[in-house]
Image (cartoon, rainbow, N blue to C red):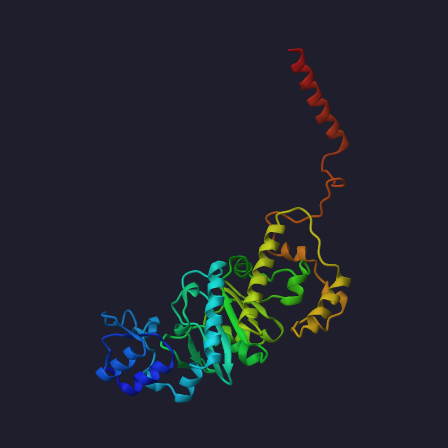
Length: 358
């Protein structure tokens, strides 16, 4: 039985949460109840006692993950600070945009952002990203240990930490499951480069890592060495994870990546195929470098930048349902010979003449 007394209630109020979820394992003293009520905190009682088969209420993300008094006062103040509240609002806004763009379904996806030294705000588990509220956010340290919030933090926060620890300039991380980029992820393919300038400048090469269990140490180990030079990474058979210099910037990388993948998939069904000329690609990389964005190709010479034709890459070992081949309506070579064409024309002429004589 967990007892919430006046001290714990006062600490809870400082978190800024507007709802306290109680269950049969939590008892609130009358004095604590008064403090919560006077602060405008709604007390919700969940009648259903947790069972071993269901997991505890906290494991489902809707009850306190620790006694409010268990959080350190400094962390409580930080979590309720103006800076923290601004980040919470930003994360909720991006969550709505991710959901509206159909980048996540159910409770999929997660977002995080740096708050201070070894302190990060992140989304809770078990919640649709389109319907989050600031008081649902969580605060964790660099190991993923929860230090603030009454909802349980995302189970994939350790993957985010792989980026934060390997890439100091990463301010925010955004993970979702956009369909078009996800199509490349389940095919085990990197999107081909050199097709659209926006990807080259604002994202760069989209990296790929083979499938590992989401939230596991194995996937974090795969992401860690890739993040410093790749702001967008396909997670095999899973989704996309991006980082940026703000919460919105991390989302921008996600949006640009999926739009690019969608365009490539559509273009693949159209005959022909052109790409950005090799001698023009350094100009785009220079623009990118001037913006202070990372890229794994800065040290490559033009020849190294264009070793593989992007359309050949799309149709390489994986094959294409509709092979992409150069096409010109004027000069397109026909497989039929002149004699065969003449025979077809003569046959059609004879049929027309025969019909006219009837």
